[in-house]
Length: 151
Image 1 (tube, rainbow, N blue to C red):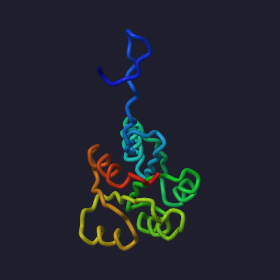
Image 2: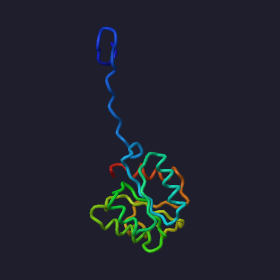
Image 3: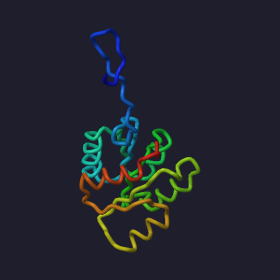
Image 4: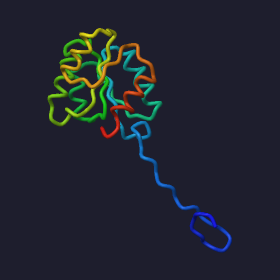
């Protein structure tokens, strides 16, 4: 006899399988924030991430981002280093010093790939650093790495 629940002598209804543990990619509840003053970068990251099933919130600079972070509570933040008014390092430091958001992973985005830039990002609390232009696979790998349990 095979596994299942027998409803009569003739048919068997298979038992439901256990649901797999959801990764951030499988959940529409997982919100990613993209903060970049470049409209092109924001739009391309937003389009790519939405196609993968993520909720995406964008901001053009650190000031706009800080209000939206409080409202949307993203599970992961992609943050450009070079922005007007409040740069990425300053924004990251403010996020990481806030008790509610200090555990939120922050990934710095920069067109510079220097050791100094990476070190400065670590000093202010960044969790990861990606050099622009980035590939789809890079963004998704970072979300898989830091997104588990973030939301």
